[in-house]
Each structure stands twice: as C-alpha cells, then as structure tokens.
Image (cartoon, rainbow, N blue to C red; front, side, top):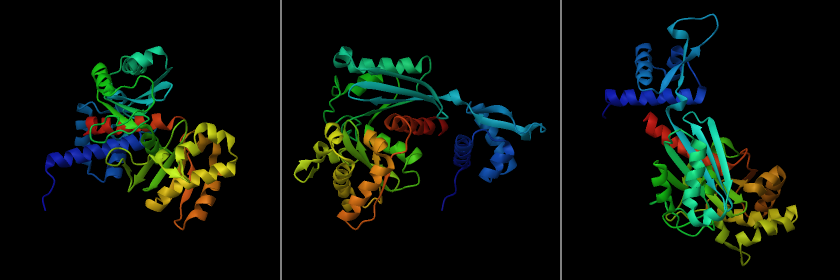
Length: 342
C-alpha cells in the first residue's frame, strides 16, 4: 500500500484545518492541534502556508488575560472569494451573493417585464451584477424549473419561464465571465433541506415540492439522484387514479380542497416513492409544505400508512426563507471551496 506523499499530506491537512475554521469560526493554534490531532510543528507550518496563500488571517486574540502566539485567533479570509445563487421563477429572478464563509453580503430581485421575453439572459446578468457590485464571482449556481441534463447542464424541456431559450446559459456565462451551473430548482431545495432543514441527518429522503409547480427531488445514500436525463423525481407527470398528479394538486386545486382531501392526494403521490425507493422520509416542501406544517404532514403520514407497509415518516419543510436560493448558494460554495481550498 502506497503512503501519501508529503505534498498530498500537506494538502489534506490544509483542507482539514480550513473545514474546521468553516465549522467553528476563528481558532487558536492549540485549538487547531486539539481538533486535528496534528503536532505543534505541523500546525505551525500549516498556519504559515495558509496565511501566505491569503486563505487565513489573524482575527484577534483568545481570552482577555492571554497574550502571545498561542492566543492568536486565526480565521478565514472571508473576501477571498464570492459566489452567487440565482432562483429563476416564472415571474421573477432572485439573487443572493455570499462570501467564502457562507455569509450573505448582498441580495437582489426583479420581476419579469417585457425585457425578459426579449433578453432573459441579459436580465439575469444585470440582476447578478447588481447584487455582486464590484465583487468578482467565483461560481454562480442557477436554479430553474425543468429537466436539466446532468451530462451537459442544459435544459432538456421547456420550463414555461418567459424568454427562456436553448443555450441561454452559455450567454449568461459569457457575459458574467464566471462559471455558471444550471440545476433543477427542486434539487437545490433538497440540498437546502438536507443541510439546514427537515432532512438534516437523513441519508435517504424525498422532497415533495408543492408550489407554483409540482415535482420532487430524490436523495439516496446522501447523494442527489438526477437520473439519466435529469428527470428523476418528476412526479407531476405520474397518473394517479387516471389523472396527472400535478393536476390533482396544482395551486388552484389545492385552494379548493380541505386538509384531509389534500393530504390524501399528496399521500398517493408520495406512495410512489415509498413503494419504489423506500426512502423512509418524505419532506413536504414549497408553499404548501410550509403553510400546512406539521398538521398536514401528519395527515399525509396517516394516509401513507393506510396505503402500504413501508414505514415512511413525513415532515414539513423547516428551511427558513427561499429554499431554492439557499440550495443554490450552498452548491456554489461547495464548488468554490473545492476550487479555492483545494
């Protein structure tokens, strides 16, 4: 068995320290030694390397009565890189810009007008630039409705967004001069749910999205599953009792249903995932999931238990704010940190 080269060992130790600073915030050298298990000389060399690379800096001292090198607090250089998350709705574009630590530094939004239909790419670029200001963007992740091909990152089918055209993301990339990744919006919401919401700690779950659109995202073994064409989770097309699931629970229909009937219909859609994938957890997301809360989740769970034997917990989304936008930022941060931190 080959051992790691000195260069690889240094790279592994550097990334370990950077991830600890992301998790805990500023730390002293003794704290880094305790958390990493590395020796004093190794941590000293590591700190020197990371400071020379412009990745960490001295942010203060630990304890009012302590002085000296061991009391120095080392933290990430937050402005080392910035990312943007973009949520494209059928009537609006929302943008959040965050620094490498994940701190939100700016937000912007605009609703669609006539310009969206003639130059949606230009509208997206202008909103992103307005939010970024003078900051250069390392990575931009865009969430939008529709099937996104995992192989080329392009939209497979129409998404009903005014002005959307094939190959439009290439124009956005060129104008922004930064890497731009397109992802299905429900997939991004699932990432937010797994990191900060109802699915924290769950390796397997399905996010059932009930908003202005109807869909789902599948996470198995801790990984988002997109399918061969990007169509995994597109439950809206599934026929339930001879009617497409999306037609049974679309926004206008949901308003006319009482809680139990809505839960019954949702359960029939969720049952498809419970039967085929046995995820153990279904999260109700989108506006309906938030508004219905724990009460709707329990009703859906009751109907699910009556449909089949696979034990399936149902929870309402607990992500605060725009889950799609949060998932886009988290995804962009993962990519940027791999790029910047190595």
